[in-house]
Length: 113
Image (cartoon, rainbow, N blue to C red; front, side, top):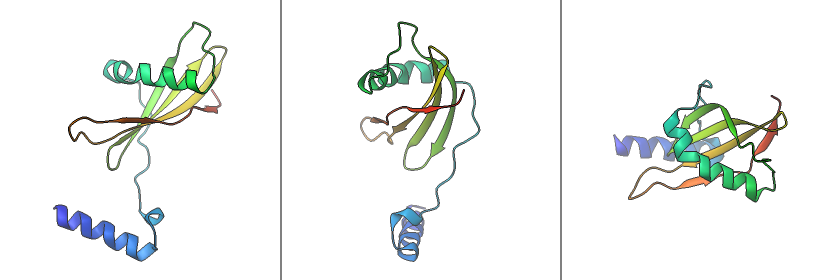
């Protein structure tokens, strides 16, 4: 299975000339955030909002929905609501667990509510 997967990826890179040509699956349909996801990602996402200079006004973050994408790890796209009526998308990439999985968080992007 592994040599077939490596061969397929190598063929796509060779065919398209770069890694940008790889066909990636799209995000899944949005669903409610589970308590396990909330516990795992809340502190990391809150720290990223603070680092980006976005004030939360002691009201915190409300997780609206999450979409996932599986490719060399798991990418979570959270839609969040902050006070006053602002919505954000934030993307968190969770690497495959080798000894320990790492979280890579992008800056929040403002979107319509």
